[in-house]
Image 1: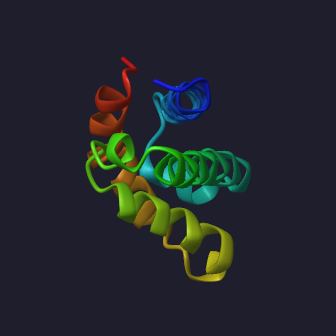
Image 2: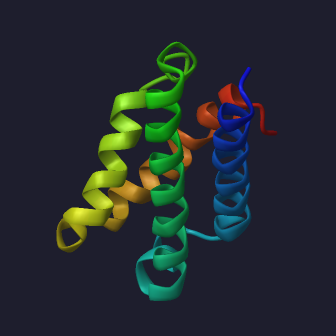
Amino acid sequence: MRVEAKKHLHDINQAADLLTRFVSARSLTDFENDAMLRSAVERQFEIIGKALARLARLDPGLAERVTECRRIIGFRNILIHGYAEVDPRMVWDIIETKLPRLRLEIGGS
């Protein structure tokens, strides 16, 4: 595996770990009412999406092993370009239902 690919995987793993720490012992209501928490979470999702997009250009086969690779990249684009339309409940659902799988696939805990 190329060094650049390892770096992108590391960045994804680190962002996923931070996301998990940020939302630990938090609820959807906490998330909806805390602008700083939402901003921090969205930033980590942006990093994950961008690192995965770079990985997809560098090593498409490796990136495609990540379940819903294209959807993750698309979610990053929504956060960046469609930020006014982001529903906190959707973000929270992704944290609860999609983030654990991503962490396992990338090699996190």
